[in-house]
Length: 273
Image 1 (tube, rainbow, N blue to C red):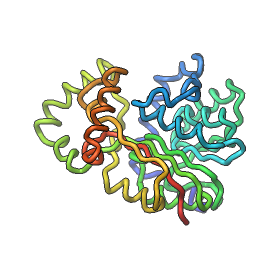
Image 2: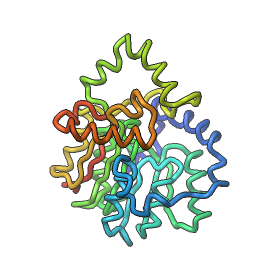
Image 3: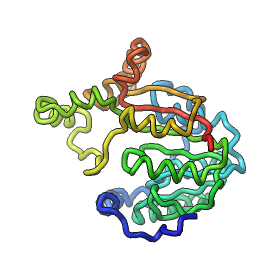
């Protein structure tokens, strides 16, 4: 367990807390709406969707009674769904406002989940605590080397680590950051992709690069799962079933280039200590 868990937050972490305070206000009505566990029912049927494919993998694993850590749990969606699979779930987030919603949802669904407030870079868990760690759309918000040290510390030897993250190869990112794309094309594509609503993007987040993936892979010498998603969808096209299906097929056809052109990575392996 880290002795410095109460250290002051960094500027980046404070910015994240403030952003998610407003984000939680905008989603307070979640606790009044039915919570969906549909993704646990034959998730393999949505083969084009990274989130559903993550659960296609998780539901094939016997998580009943296992100690599972959900990294950066937000409103607790993954924590609730994994708890429904019978796991003993521990979930943390930096945002107290997000955690308040997560706790209310879990209580309403009758699920016993241990929620805690802490940064990914300083975890208040004992060494060798978890059989499985799940990180979805969170590593691009954190100091990856520090977070990976902590995840490795609190995971048991051989623990399963499942990662589902937005991604951009450095070559692709150079194009994305060009004046033409960033200054002219992207604002217009953003309206096409997200419509009039504001995209869920914090000021300091950065898509994971191949170098970031390598930092994560350093503790996962072999992978049990490795898939690429979102070549055009969510980048230049809005997400819809027909477009996502076509996008997945196209990416499969361009498999030798997948690591260069994909916009999302889903992978899993066993942590070596």
